[in-house]
Image (cartoon, rainbow, N blue to C red; front, side, top):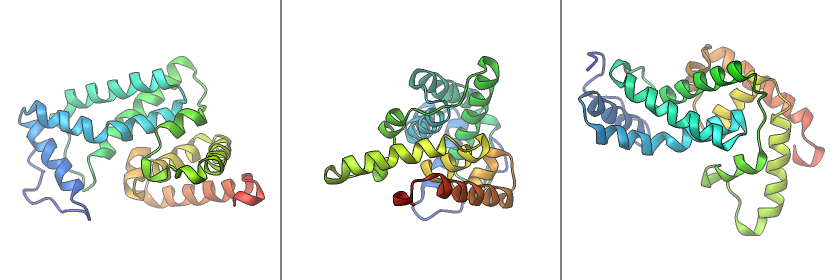
Length: 199
């Protein structure tokens, strides 16, 4: 087990960071059930990220599975970076998506229906506003798809995945200032692309 994992991990507001790293520590000690709990905890986050980037459910399922296979093989090499372990899983997924796109010359598109299917429940509208919210969501995703690749990824990580600026910066291989600037430009561009009534 790496020596750089502190004994008393700093806790975030709801304790998820400390719990995640405790599971990592157990998995590094050979506890396969702990890795299974990591899988259960982060599978949906990774899957939503990959599906948003590819827009292809079967490919997203395959790359999500490959993400966790690679993570399992490398679990002993991960070290505490002060962030939630979920950022590490998404980084692996991001690299797999980039490899997939390069190898197959795959064009990044998103299927609004499929992305909406896997949106976190907190983002799903109630029955009374489902039609309006569905149309708004579809239009928003259509506009996001018109952004550049970096802006799309930033929006997906920050707003669809709910990652912090620091976690987004780590995944994208940029500093936090660059991510804030990228996010600002993406949001400004979205404001220009969205129809007047949705701004």
